[in-house]
Image (tube, rainbow, N blue to C red; front, side):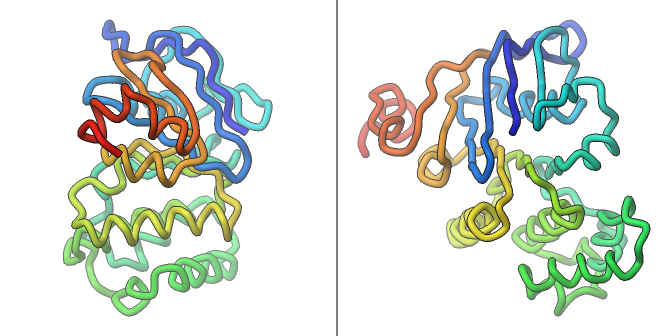
Length: 237
């Protein structure tokens, strides 16, 4: 579904990614882990046209998407939830969701899509007329996710979704992400600082270090790798 080949990317004169290769298949969760500054978020930002790509290939469903504008990427089936639970604080929950549906011209369809989000996140329905700035961190993350799901993406990209959440809310969030793959058939590319949870959740994990893929694998294979155990899991698993 998503194929990134020999990608070089960064910001201005700062080159962050140095020839990486990453792929995401249908109905897959793929996790990117690694230390701060390794380039994890830059991968997602490169796909979404935020970072500057100097060389390499980014294809989605066989189509070159390197030069597509934001609305064209969304229209092609890609949604992005940035780091920081970004919502429009002075708009209500419903108004935030309507912002996510801005590209949908059919009002009845918009209403139905918002209803589907409420089914996934009932607390948003109960508080739909509340301003978004009044929400807790977990509720804001639900709202940011719900807004991204309005357009029925084939690929959902999540940048540090568990950041700042309590352990319980992290567990709830990872369950939601798993259901999006299993029940909705959405492929997910996730940047995650909780390495252990990310590896357990993902079908395949890439370890990035200094802008390069240092290791890739699935499930038990990568959990048992000495480099992962020593650096990211406290030496044991």
